[in-house]
Amino acid sequence: MSFDFSPQLRELAEKAEGHVALRFKAIEWVSLKNTEKVLNAFSNHRVADTYFRGTTGYGYDDQGRDKLEEIYADIFGCEAALVRSGFVNGSHAIACGMFACVGSGETMLSLTGNVYDTLQTVTGQRGKLGGTFADYNIGFETVDMKDGLPDWSEIEKRAADPKIKAVFIQRSRGYGIRHTLSIDEIERLCAIVKRVNPHAYIMVDNCYGEFCDTREPTEVGADLVCGSLIKNPGGGLAPTGGYVAGKKELVDRAAARLTLPGIGAECGASLGVNRLFYQGLFMAPHTVAQALKTAGFCTALMGLLGYDVTPSDDRAGLDIIHTVNFGAPEKLLAFCRGIQAGSPVDSFVTPEAWDMPGYDDQVVMAAGAFIQGSSIELSCDGPMRPPYTAFIQGGLTYESGKLGIMKAVQSLLDEK
Ligand SMILES: *Cc1c(COP(=O)(O)O)cnc(C)c1O
Image (tube, rainbow, N blue to C red; front, top):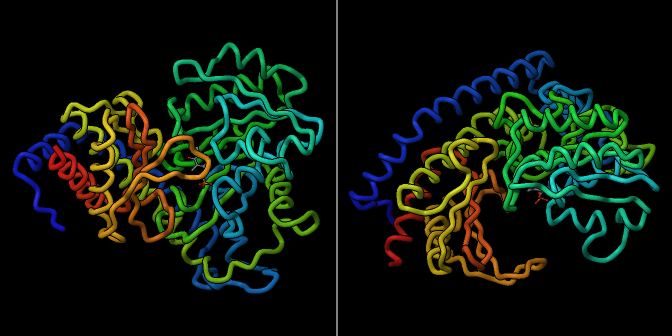
């Protein structure tokens, strides 16, 4: 293994960095603003060493856990939050948020097309029944996106229906063919819903979007946001977990879903994660900036090499995901293998395409992460079907992200 790149690749990399120099400045500015927000919240809540101690057993009076939740609420500009290792992943936090917003006989309307794959089993569209929306007689409808953006006029019509008790917005593109929404676009969606159906709750799947902007959806009209701690807000340090933040009544209901009615947020031993959650949140604005720079570098470099990439310059930096179309299976594989070889962990492993449960095509994945499945760390995956697109995200440090991307490109060039 070596990072002994050819002079041509080094030159291209320098050129790519030149192209994104201004964008890097903008990313650093957002990171500075968000760091200020985080430091202010830490200071206002008088964070001290004692907060890093955990509880065991029932987890009553976990001062560190409870304070961290107040700090999240401050940062997200809302009333309350739940930040728990008991959320097994982002989908779990989002599902608890969904059940907080709608009850039996009510309907949720997604404004951004269908929900993320792992949530389609929650709405009851896929998989077996068992505690799903369908089981509880909760309706679920979608408004498809138009040219990758919200279908504004259709949303205005459909959201006005009095049976709609809550709307759902997915901020990031996830692994779909659509655009990631800007905070201004989320603000516009919230304004439409509040005008045509003022009593409907607005919830946002915030995965991959946290700290990409100086404002979060809860600061522009959303009632609830949910996400994963092994993505942006965990800062690469949180070992597991998820969060929900928003109106107190909704956070309380999500807590009752996470634990049980009557106990809610009162229980849940933090064991040893408090310090990592605090330190991860402290790091998060900076870590997200590292991932955004890695994304900027990758799309610029791959663009120079003639590949079709997203996001385009005019929509860059809205989340940490970017894509490259390779047009051929062996190129996608070679790129993924290079990403793996450039990773700090499991660099000796060779990724192969495999039949991943729940997917129609084989999928190839590259990840050499300190935390299993963590996608704030440089990682990449792609379904083995035309146009052989790699979805790439993360990078704990820009330096390692850049080297990882260059290693992938070297592997791609050597493949020819
Ligand atoms: C990652 C992600 C989720 C949640 O995924 P988990 O793997 O369960 O953490 C949900 N929605 C979007 C858009 C995502 O990117």
